[in-house]
Image 1 (cartoon, rainbow, N blue to C red):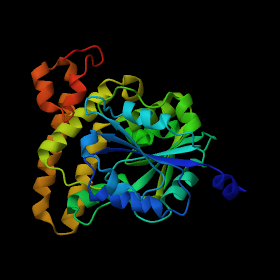
Image 2 (image 1 turned 30 degrees about the horizontal axis):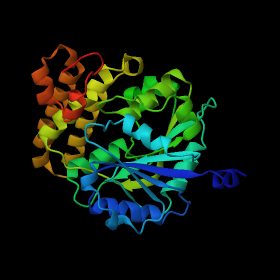
Image 3 (image 1 turned 180 degrees about the vertical axis):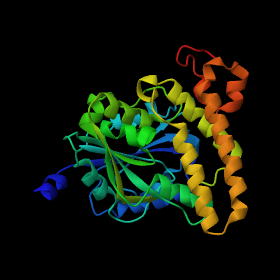
Image 4 (image 1 turned 90 degrees about the horizontal axis):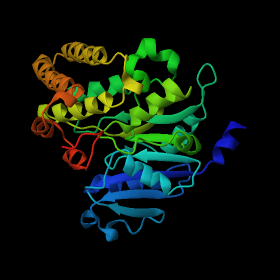
Amino acid sequence: MEEKRLNKKTVDVIIPVYKPDETLRRLLEGLGKQSYPIGKIIVINTEQSYWNDEAYNLIENLEVHHVTKEEFDHGGTRNQGASYSNADVIVFMTDDAVPADSHLIRSLLKGLEQTGKHGEPVVQAYARQLPNPDCGLAEQYTRSFNYPDQSRVKTKDDIPELGIKTFFASNVCCAYDREAFLKNGGFTNQTIFNEDMIYAGNAVRHRGQAVAYVAEAKVYHSHNYGCKTQFHRNFDLAVSQADHPEVFEGIRSESEGIRLVKKTCFWLAKQKKYQLIPGVIIKSGFKYLGYFMGKRYSSLPKWLIRKCTMNQAYWEKTSVFGRQL
């Protein structure tokens, strides 16, 4: 019965794209091999000059829309993509995530069919991220820490145990019940970053809904970010949290980062890769500094905010949460 109900659901995939490369081609090819049918692949491409129609003209169900760099927003652009879909389920992906097998979409849909232990409906189901072949050793462990091999449904009851990880979800590859998505108001229309966790936090904390981590749904996705990039990313991450106290206030956060650093160092020591441990500690310091400053961005001068952020276009908009920079 469950399989029959599952098979009746329609699915569209929405992918924000910027400067597409060979990875996007592999992503689209992977979606074309899925065991579960996909209706439309909706691409929201930033800057039309970077898009080559001929490179993707063999993708029959591809629908491409263009925005300018000034128009792009992490939440608003994805909402725009969702507006082009009438499917039961919308799957958001990034242009650098590649399906690991042909069962990605089916596994995500099964994740959405679950409920929490008190019957909370799952409205958001995100995939496991596997390291790419060129992924650094420390980052490989981070992947396994954030994306273990055990699936889990997370509800409000998990906040005391999991802290901020209760709201952890990733639009690198994440399926949403579209009806619930619309009722919940979609993503925050103007957000610097972290639109997926803001949505999850509101769903879990205020709407009695659940988020599913689906370990059986797998994509290849990883980066070898340096200290500077990690600083910028964590600054923007903290800005998003500071601007959404209704989601993140009173939720344990920094302790989770400390736990990751300790576990990574212990794991590297076990692998006898002692020479990598100082690098992990230094990079973690940059992460924490970025996070610390981002949480307090409202007290920083405009010039310093521009130095700290990785999303200049966001701050150049007319008004950002009442502050014109």
